[in-house]
Image (cartoon, rainbow, N blue to C red; front, side, top):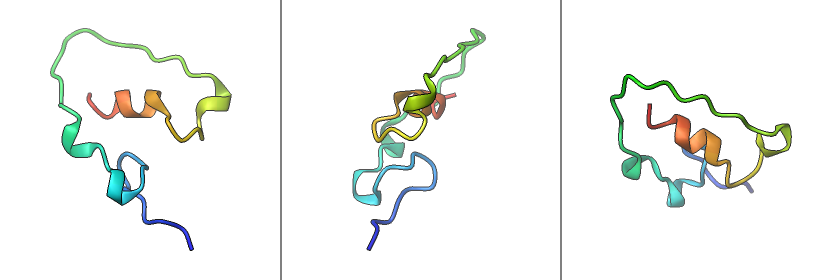
Length: 53
């Protein structure tokens, strides 16, 4: 049986980080480079960083 995941941050619902991620309004563009092996990694920090835009 798999755990329920948050649809936004993809973490288990009991460890959802969405309420802690601030929305940042900035004119500066940020380009995130991510190694292909990190795409499905559990701690996928690039995905979390993209949620704050």
